[in-house]
Image (tube, rainbow over all chains, first blue to last red):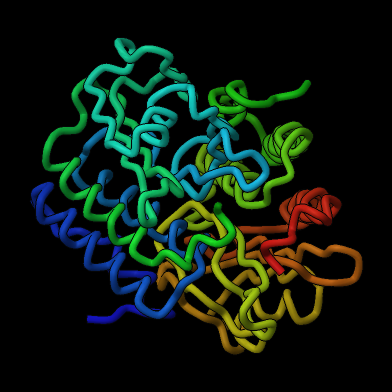
Length: 183
Length: 183
């Protein structure tokens, strides 16, 4: 099924009651794939994907307090800059050497952090955050962005989140030409 | 007061209890001005401004269901493309000839629509929307984007909203060089 233009608005952020995490992520992936099919603008796509994730976590009562993206800063290749997100206002830039997002960008590896207070150099954009997952988005072997989700409780994310968010990251990275403004 | 980097995160979306609309908008303007002082990346700035507005309307119990931006589509000057927002997934593109956003972009004038069902050619990205305000963002005499806010009840916006959102639009348009990716 292809959701474009007007149709993407209403249904894609409604999740069936009692849906489990696995099924909810599957719906997000399908919606993300559909909305990217006819559209290559990265700001447009990341803005809608952040919304898909946000309302998924809300429907799961996951206590997620932030979901969104940081991209490479086109003016400074040593830092990330805030991209589209849902949640409260966030740090504008993050050095590659700092925090969980920086670690994901530097290593190209997913950072699954059950307790952010135990993560060396953690940056508290929001002091309420207790756990976090950050997935790098790669085009070829180059990190172009990270997908960051924060949770108000410890151990908010596990292997199911890692698997699906990495699939989502792969989908976003697959459209390499989409990222021309972000890198 | 200048809010940059880490400090912008926590306080700028907290509004005092019982604050009125006028005071709340003043806080948003001050926060927006502060966060744009050291940062010219339009995606970063619009993402944080959408968040400021969203949590302001939440604190006012304003029943706002969408707050965000459409910019000129760099691939098609006859349409707007979705920018950073808060709320449920939205229409990806809007022709200049269509709806309330299109009217604001075409005329360069704020569209204050107390009842969207009476607006010719209204586009229902979200069928729950009952009223809407759209403020054009101008760089010189050229529209580069529109700021769009939707409400679940009729007559959700009035002169106070118009005045403050136009001030916000002016602030965003003032940084003309910020918009190079959006136009």
